[in-house]
Image: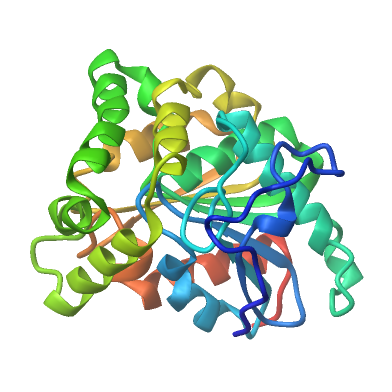
Length: 292
């Protein structure tokens, strides 16, 4: 796995030349693999590319895997102004375009990416699939939802998170929220890793922009227009978005398969990485025809 140079979190972002609302020069991306289909990993609202360590390690032998620190998170530069859900989706689209012509890419897999989104990342992935369908060859949506705008109380709670972060600071905020993201039986080492990832990733104003993008979003009317083959996964002990939200996605997307990940909470990709990766590879064998 390699870590390319990127702008520091305090770096200013110049106007993008690509038409995307965020300059990719400021985006930190982790990479693994040199051959096979492109897989883009989009993390949850309290996380970073570090959430996909097991996927970078476990999928890189079959695919070219990218995992971003979303704009305003971790080692990515702050955006110049607020981004809505379309802004995040357009930035992801620009990232896919930038890597579709990699020197090591395999042209037999086309120019699209298989987009793996967890929680907030799954909401971005679904919006990307309807806004830029030519760039999405497949979707893996894990422990996600159609957005927090489906319910007034959920939207209000999401908008309140920025004030909570400002009041507590990243460390205390992560210590309060991180343990809720895994199952009650999760090992302490995993809980600590989740808390550390969150504490190192979240800051204002990026977290506030992300929270508003969730609060303002209800994807239910557009889910039926998702054309990409979609794998929906959810931990059976997910108490954050819950199995009902994942079932709603799977039921509305026409080309979908739904999988429960046993013994996992909201972060199924981190809590049960071997099982999670096996399902992703099975999906890629069907949608991208990767070899056994």
